[in-house]
Image 1 (cartoon, helix red, strand yellow):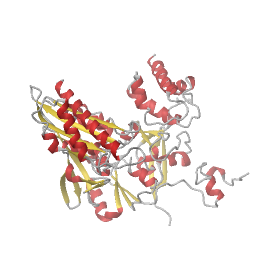
Image 2: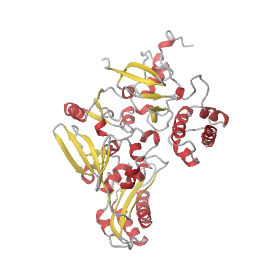
Image 3: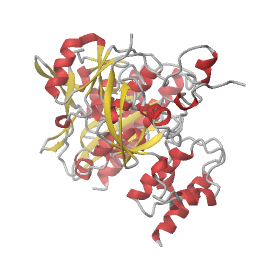
Image 4: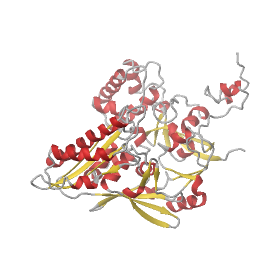
Length: 160
Length: 321
């Protein structure tokens, strides 16, 4: 039995994407396997690790806990959408490189989405606010310290 | 060396990719949940019609922060999902004199950021501070958490302590249940398969010396509570308690409230001794389970300590007003 396919129209990183998806295809699998936006990572696949974080209408959500069909009519920003239009890195991404805010890189795209949301809302966050903002994202390499430093550095640079 | 015939159409390296190839299966996008039929309801009436038609095989999909992982692990396999996320009439906050009305599909983050609501029903914001993470609260809904009825979840406990009322809608009409009746056991409520939670009434305590507090112990912040406690008290001008409510989550199959014990606090000045006695009595009424993380005895110990802590914090906030 072939499953019913549902039409979806989603704006992904500013570009209109259309597809027909089975209802049970998760948003992250659609982004990665069909749109080939592999910057968003799949970690635990049940909403614990935060690796799959993307922005839905500007707010970070876990893309493993949404079906692609639910993104219909919405706006998605993945980590690929954080870089500047010419492809150069954003202030936050640069700061992650400089402070060694990543080692294996698996959590990085989710961390960037969570931290970018924080900086969009609170341009000059306290350390507690930074730690709270990335509280839903697991990192098994850095011990989080350099990630917190990266967000702080980015905040300082963006003030200038 | 594995030869890929059509590399541009193959999925990337997850189980349905290379593994599928080596087992001779047709590669395709990975699908975690069992198949289901899906309908995006445009209105509450349409959602009710769909639920009436598919009844026990259907499930309401709100924020999906609990249902989707359960479906991914195939712990639940609904045949039909009724998606209520696009129903605008289920997303609202109305602040009235004696209560606040919140639409069932209002996002938790919307509630957390609503300062008016924070002032009128402070316990709600205090409870949300313990719920998941920003990414889950952006999507998770107030009604979804209540209807899911995890015994250690924060919003059901807040609803129980404040005596919130839930309005349920079906194609046959609406009915309203008190939180006390609503929760019947772990992950179970009186919501019938053809009903959809429509709105929640949260009572407002109008006295000007009211304080509330929410606290819990979890393995990590944002995890489900091992035990959670919530309290709200009102004082008169001489610091005497005029009204008190408190409860415990994670300590039984449903969130618990203790109105008979709380009423004994009325008339006292909420001295530590009175609070400790109330917390002792409440802990004695709990029936926690044992698991990998904590024994029954430890959870009962937490129940006592946290109930007292919540009551003290609530008192201190009321005294400062």
